[in-house]
Length: 382
Image: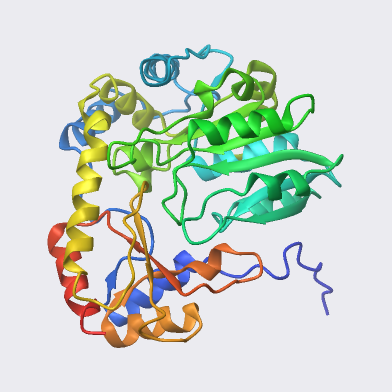
C-alpha cells in the first residue's frame, strides 16, 4: 500500500473555465463561458508563423525572448505609455500571462508574506501564493460598480504585506482603474517595500472613450511593479499562450530565474511572427472599437431579457445580474442555463475565495455576431 503525499492544494479542484466549457460541449450549448474568441486571428499572422517555421525557426528561443520581439515590445510600450523599458533587462517573453503571473509571484513571495488581492479575481493568483507559503489577504471590490475601496485596502495592509495584485481592465467585472486609483495606491505604499503585480492583459479593450491607465505610466509605481500583458488577448490567439512582463531590471532578473525553470522559453516561430506583426499598429489601435461594437451588439440583443446589465467598461466580458429570473446559487443557475437554455456562462462566485454569490454571471462577447445573436435569443426567453 502506497502512502501518497497529501495534496498541497486540497481544496482546489478543476478550474471553473474547464468545468463550464466541458458542460457546454456535453450539452452542445453556445459557449460564452471561457474567454476565447470563436473567430480566427489575422490571416497575415498565420502566414508569418508558417513562413518562420519553413525558414527553420523551430528550435529553442533565447530564454528571455527573441531579441527582436523584446525590442518591439519596448518600442510599443513607449508609443502607448510614454515609457521605454530596456529590452535586454526589463522585458521578458513568457508562455502566456498565467506563466508570467506564476513566475512573478514565485519570484517575490516568501513564506509568511501577505499578498493583498482585490476580488472577485482571476483564479490563478491564490494557488501560487499559497504554494509559496504566502497568505492571501482579500479585499472585495465595492458593489454595485466594483470600484476599489482604498480605505479598506489600507486597513488590510500590514508589516507583513509584500505584494498587491491589480487587474485592470478587470476580469470578471470589466471595471477599469483610473489615474486617481493609481495615485491613491502610490501614496498608500510610499515609504514601504510593497511590490505590485499589475495584470493588464485586456489593456487594449477599454470602451466609451475611456483610456487604459497602465502602471507603466506612473513613475512611482512602475519602479516597484511587474506589468503583465498578453499577445493572446490582443491578437485573438489565446491558444498560442504568448505573453510578456515589463519590470525593473532587479525584479526582471528574479522573474527570469523562475521563468527558466517553468517553461524556459516560448515557441520561436510564434515569437518571430508576433515581432513582425506588432510593428503594424492598426490592429491593437482598433481593438477598443472592435470589441465595443461586439459589447453593444450583445447588450442590444439582450434588451428584452430580464437580466440587469450595466455595459462593461473594459475586457471582452459582460456581467449580467439575474436576480429577477432566479434566486438560485449562481453556479447552479449557470449549470441549469447550460443544460436547459443551451448557453454556457461563468458564475462570478467562482472568482471569490469564499464563493460569495451576488447573482452575477459573466458572458464572453469575443464571439461572432451570429453566435451572440443566437445566444441572446435563448436568454431573452428566460
